[in-house]
Length: 351
Image (cartoon, rainbow, N blue to C red; front, top):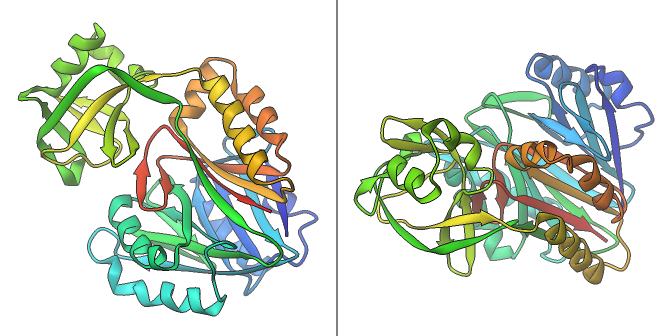
């Protein structure tokens, strides 16, 4: 299989798709002002080609911040695209669409990946999708777009998750997740006074969450939003750690980028040697895949800001390009199987 990436910093879709012929799946990564026009135009240019899209930045060896990026798979790929609606209330109502699509491309665990773009309410969407994929042992990689909108096959949806099933006809696929944080000290917290709908964390071990965070890190309230780049929270999920970013302060509570529930056990995280961790990830992928056709990744917006602030973003993209054809999305939350995480990188590698 092969992967195409075209871009236009000015948002010119015709420029972005120049040279794209006979795609078997298209992923549109657009800006908020032109998203609707881009979705419509893309469908006109490539009618009946499965497609999904969202609002967000894209990249290969450069970042497209406000324009448009187009990712496409072709030459040895079977793909289908669809949407589950009402993700905030009842996405399971639409699960038959996913069942039919899995059957349609004869999906198998070693050669098929599900890539999704979500408008919000990610945890509910992922639980629904993965309840079916888990039985087939099919992995999922994806992320959250901006402005609460996604597209599928030329139509725009709100309160929905757009997904694509991609089958590599001539090789295997594998999903990866990269975590550049590790536990700080022996801090362990029990969350309480949470508001699941609004991602609010009120108390930690019976104390105001804002006060606990400030006292441990010796920072002012104004520093909290940027300190989360270095010190997010983590929720223990078996052997995995799900990263929880802080969005903002609300009184004595903290508003997060993912749901926190009463009685969740949380830990404090701190930034590790991210340059070495990236090298380790690249080495692990190369060990698994002597021959790589493509890599599609989702990097968190906070990783992008952290790397940019430390003048590492360009170097990072160059390092990842050593894997071959590497492209991706800057998301507002990352998906890895049934996990909705923050400040992470998830990716799928195609042989």
